[in-house]
Length: 238
Length: 310
Image (cartoon, rainbow over all chains, first blue to last red; front, side, top):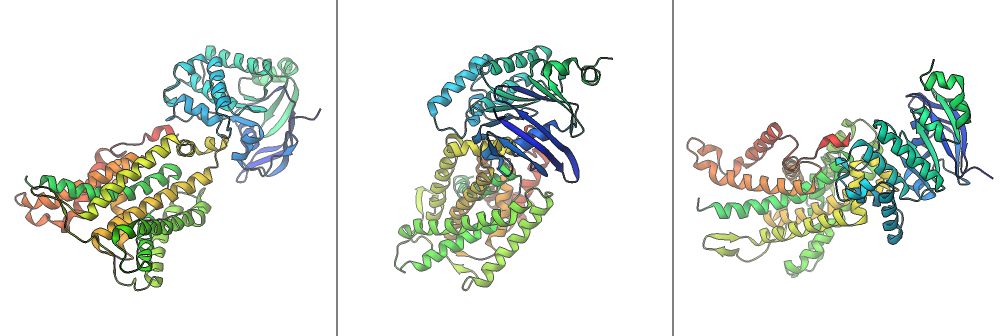
């Protein structure tokens, strides 16, 4: 089986500062793969490059058998790659329903879209209760639910979640992580970027540890969770 | 006080004209945070586009019949120049520091004036623009409505209604709102934000052409410099209403128009200010109002909440 996403020797720079220095990894259909690491390790830069918001210096990205390099950002979602960005970035002055409909911007099947909006409301009932409210009025955790729901609206083959637990209360974080597990069970492939290594590795089939632009360690989620250096560096143990 | 109804009608018509131009500033600013200081020249280009059509038509074409064609001609010219400016002058500078596109806009404004001055036949002096024949409509005893005012008072609400429905209801309008609120995330939704930006310039251009025809009808003449003061006034209106907000632009236009009309009518009656009234001082009062708003309510009347653009 070929991988859904293959990243090979990817390098990305902001001006002269290289943020991603030649990383390679793959994501197989049905897997959760996580990139963990501290702030500035290059995780968000990697996701923003995969979704076309940043142009790589070199390296190749193949998604679903096609090269992604050079494809503009607004075409990438049509290929089946959805990105829920760091910091949520919901559209604050649009309603919750409108935000979700924008997630399905390129789809033409009005009925299917309406059905998927209801599916998001089943997943996150609080969003359904506030369907006509401006999204900017939601709490951080609710905005995170909306950002995830919006990304699902394109019916992606691969869902990229950037820091879904950032700034959330522990209860809300558990709720989001439980949802990621549910999504996996329903067959969604997920590339998860997290600073919360414990939570991410518990869910992930595979994990990659990033440090200043490089992948320094790879393994199954369980392996990394028990790896001594990971425990020391990211799980706060001595 | 018996002049009040007439002052309001005059101010409303002038304000509708400012509002139409202000839409162009506000739409572009709302999406790319650029003050397109060449927008006044887009109005001027629209006026010359409309005049060109008028000159092509047989001399005995009645103005009401010629008007729709003149509007189309003006809009074609304005939209073409506005979208070309976006594509070739502003787009290459989209990631440049803010000052670069601003200076480009000022340069473009001068260039467009000089191109018309140099190449449009006889544009080195003012050119006559057709005007409605016939008397003003008498609305009440002492209240008159000029025929050219009727044009702008009908056109502005229609344009506004169409734009409001388009932005709120259509799929492209939704994409436009998304792009204004968060351009990178809009791309992640599959929105081609370059096309949305071009569209914002095009809508601004079309509205500018309507305003240009209205201005031509009022003044009976147009010239290559007409865009300067009109653009400045409309920019004032856009800031007054809250830049980035389309309804604010129209409201700001109307407030400015009425303030100008009221200042020209009333200030000369205030004891000690006789010499500061009259039409000659109306620009002073318009810009004084701008300064006042910037001091008291810098976000404008229907201000954009800038905070959630973070």
